Amino acid sequence: MKNPRDVTRTDLVRMLAVGILASAVGIAIGLSIDWFPTAAATQAGPIDTFYDVLIIISVPVFVLVTTVVLFSVIKFRMRAGEEDLDGPPTHGNTRLEVIWTAIPSIMVSILCVYGASVLSEIDAAKADQLQVTAYAQQFAWSFEYTGPGGKKFLANELYVPCAPTGTATGEGAACNGTQVKFNIKAVDVIHSFWIPSMRMKQDAVPGITTHTKVNPNRIGTYSVVCAELCGIGHGIMRSTVHVVTPARYAAWFAAKSAAKTA
Ligand SMILES: [Cu+2]
Image (cartoon, rainbow, N blue to C red; front, top):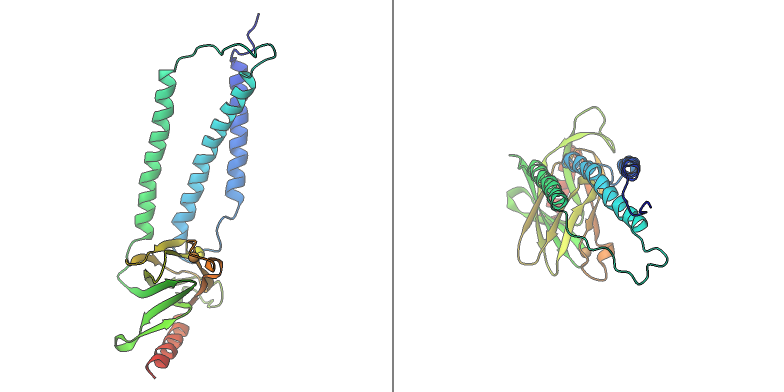
């Protein structure tokens, strides 16, 4: 009599078909979802592409594991009358174990190298930088700029200059921004400085100065978010970054530094 637990070629073909279909659907859904807000810095490009690659690679892995688990649950389930029986004694399959160790190791290694190359690309320093010190404290951000003559002033919101690359200069216009290097400090507890539109995020840790860089490339107004649960007011610990034309930036900067020195 045919053993209902025998794995037939039909079973394998069926699993493969289900797996390919589910992977295709999963990847299509994953790629069609807009995971991130409007991109406003050059860092967004490589990060968003990296994210898409991770979806393309991880969905089939998830589908493979789920398909085999569901298949096994159905195929090798306990049948009526088997309540008191032990399962058949099985021993490991060396070839299978080598394969399922080697393939993920290779995949993770490739992703490590790719991730490192994305990191070095988005974190590359430009010769021309605007340095801003970001102070995080419960539950607000403040940003320290250095004005003429080395005088410093604080602002509650960020302004960064970005020269429009075309004729449009309004909200959403493409621009080529000065690289902004943030020196991030925490006054009290651990916070995390995050500009979702620019994709960059860095912890703010008491006692040390951390850094991150963004190269703005779109005129507009974007959120600055605290991404580390820092207390009761964490949810309202927000600020705004204004990516503006160099002329507007200069006007803002002049007004701010004059107010401080007056
Ligand atoms: Cu917080």
